Length: 141
Image (tube, rainbow, N blue to C red):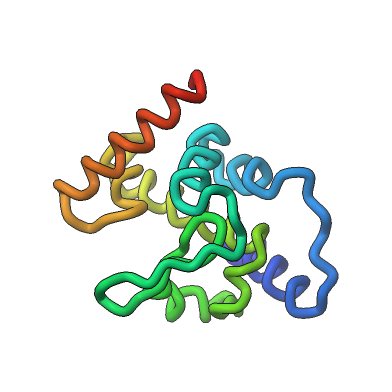
């Protein structure tokens, strides 16, 4: 993962980011995560908008396509990724999918892992996971 994120960050810095047909699909394939799930999360989080920003009540921000929270910035800095990189749809797709994959590794392939993408508390995880489940159902997945 470190190599993929570093490559995306470095190419984004120099303006030579490869043109992907679908960065979400590429990120999902790279992390071995369901493409339908990754698309559902991106649709739910940002409406598929790379420039989306949400300011949370605790002062953190959710940025970009998959609404990556700024609390991840210290960890992402180790890979050369800063706040501005998260506005690149491909970087954001890879980072968001990496976070999701990390949750799946931690909690297993469960709805808790999906809920943990958005929330720390169990009750909020359940609400989020249910919203993603309903979105997947509407999409026929």
